[in-house]
Image: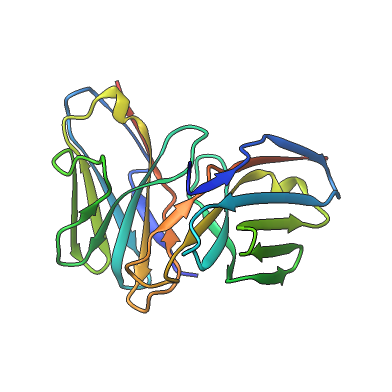
Length: 114
Length: 115
């Protein structure tokens, strides 16, 4: 079983729709949860990170973590064609210490139709 | 935000040759740098972690003699793929973290094609 599971998609939605992206994980030691966006042939860029359980909102993006269910989500409101990219969830065990490795999900390819 | 650059952005080489990829932190000192490999439609897989001035720590299954990592300064790490073969063709991405233990900043990646 992979430590982090993510539906690879592709996911195609019309412009303006609410997008829900999800990951599950098996390692209860994970404490920091991140979402990265990666455009084709580019390096990933950090969108949001959350610590432990709870919600975090940043503009059109909302990240949710449910540690009891080992389930994290990213919601995108009022989706735009420019949001079309691959979204990777990622997790680490001891926060942002230099000894902590980040484990990535496989990524979900998202396409927003104009 | 902090900027990490990689050079070259893409490279094509013949089988059996060696290729060096540079990763630089442009506006901060990176005590730790990470090297990832990403195959098409797959996620990033950590290859190794390097700390400035010390030997890199390789992940299980990654050959340290094939993927040579040098982190000689606080702003530069290099990955050399020795005796490259077609199966080494991939997207190589580095990231850098400063000494404060904050987020990893990713480079734009280097696409390696071995013919």
